[in-house]
Image (cartoon, rainbow, N blue to C red; front, side):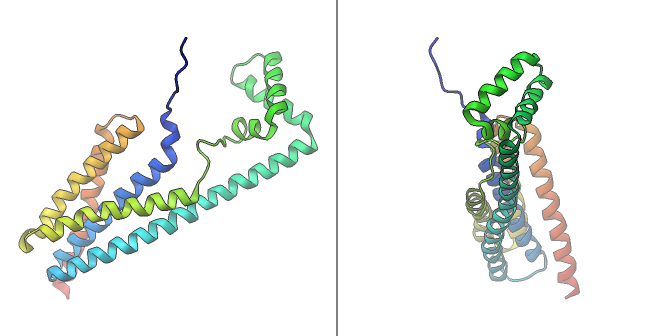
Length: 230
């Protein structure tokens, strides 16, 4: 049979999570900021300044947050690997039995499980335990810089959409146009993220649109109340 390359969607999970989170947060937070400030009856220039400031601050915040968060995950993985490396050096026989028992638990016959464990450890003992005992593999390993850059770039791209809508909107229709266009982009993002990840599109699309509408509505309501009070 002809060999073919298999493209597994799980390989995308690291950057896809950061990309969807960044773009989604960029649209929601910037659109909510614009709608909230507009509801407070401020001038269009102030609304745009708030939107630009939100884009820049949000992109930097997403990059820093993702880097710190994923770095913590990477540190935990490194600590687990160091601990496993020491255990392999101290008691390789026990570690072989432990790996064999993992395969037995998955349905492999004991004799075959031990044979597999011995062969895998002979080739790459740490890699075998990292993958099958700790659940760490090259596909899902933490990559802080990739996550930070992806989140910052996608946040800025997402935030630019409601900002452009605000720039192009008539002053008296700014808030409803930003609200409607942002909902459209959120629904499109939900569908695109689901398709890229190989999932059904309807549920993610509705979920993203609902929470985006909720966030903008709450912010607009608070903005209106503050505008009247001030």
